[in-house]
Image (cartoon, rainbow, N blue to C red; front, side, top):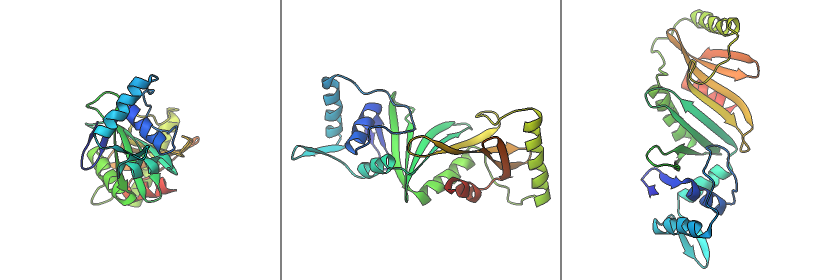
Length: 227
């Protein structure tokens, strides 16, 4: 386990222990390895947290260091969860827990088995990170947009193509970015998928059996995430 200026890297077991310390027994999102059942291993995990000054002991009580405690509390009480997948040279899959103005991101840590990287943003900072992420995976807006009629025609062609082939949008098929919007219990409210079609980027939103296609843009994406 380690702490950087921007994030913490915790094992699955440590993350679950700390979440329980915030009153959270279960969290939707990344699947976590089950914690050890023997007391010796649990004590060792607590010892490692104390040694790294992630938790301290005072008056027989454990206290979690800041800002990690605030991040964990926000994740545990999150009103909305985004489960996001992106393609590109560096595919990513992570969860963002949004509670009021706080956004907490959890992602598998590629350099250590059964570990999670966790860091917090304000919601505004998260949308700035999201804009950069979309740019990195190829979702770039054109400086000079095409006429609105061209957008409508291209969108109609896309919808007809899926209907003609009796296909559904699937990760890895055409999408470069997908966000499942859920509540804290993992109940999905909607799915938003950004795809690249011909010369332009479009935003595709799946709602039950219908597909609504609109011009892609970060402001439109934020509006859909906020709905």
